[in-house]
Image (cartoon, rainbow, N blue to C red):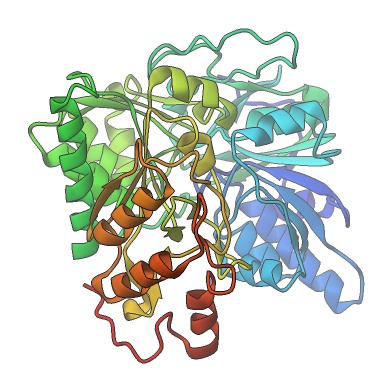
Length: 501
């Protein structure tokens, strides 16, 4: 590695002063991992000052996925975001998106790098990328995520590098950077195993485009997950039993298949449950994020290797990884998200995908993104990359929310991110519904009987029995009655007290 002595040193304020109103900025971030920090905070401060003077200052933001608070929270609070893609998890930004103050493009995460490469997302004015080092000849050693950073480094007019001294310089040993050529010049992706490496340990940038380096020393700020609750543990138990049954039935090899797990408490509970069960063989992961629960699994030898695009770890767990880099650098590969989420690789490796949804309907459509069809939560993220292409696709959710006022199982989803042609297995704390080989009516019966909370089953069965006959028996006059009840009365079944257990 080098020190990048030939590049100007900037303060965060000086870097932010270069960014103009209306600019499109590609920030490094995939969750708070690897997110730029000082420059976006300074930009938010500058935007507030300009707004107080009556001057416009709003920018277009492109990242790998969600970000740290310095990007989405700070810039949204400053009313400095006019357009955002492809995913977010910020309360401040969510409010502006749902009020139509910020335009939001919800995208499959595997699509973002190639759409940048193809020019589909327009011109990128600035890249603001966190790294652990940069060389004078333009090798950029990324920090705790890869995401879209390699692509925006190639295409941005001006590049600001935040060199974060908080992170281990040995992260280069994990990174595997490759940008696929455009069609028709693409060849099969030579990833044969979770730990296959096919690229370089660094991203590349034209040195003439680097306008400066901002020195930082700051943790990512990833929050530790809560201890698994009873509902999450029951979901995990159902998933573990199902996978063991699949091995016994010969539908999974005894050596197992790579796993993918979404972000969140339920996902962490499922991974912990798999790790604790002695009958589950040691396994690998081909996923988006490397989360807290996986650190212990790798220490224990249950997780033998993991491919991801980010180390989404709490500070405590990240420091444990840094202290044992001889172990972890050999067992973790960090790739650009076009590779970590690539549908062709997911299908070829036979990934078992486990993702969380907001709601699903009795026929197998699932909603990951919108409450009552209109209010965005976070975005589809990478779930669609895996749901559609996995060897086994498992979707999980608590059967009820808000103390039982909301049912995760409804007659018709108010918004569809994954249709019934892509889904296979649904799990709540009530049970697991395997839908493989079932037609619509049988799917509905199984979902209601196995996954729905008991307080909602009679209503759902009555809806199914009363609906007009057809291949998919829906009553368009009543299919959103539960959502309307929620909007009008604050509960999907007015007058019914539902326990959350």
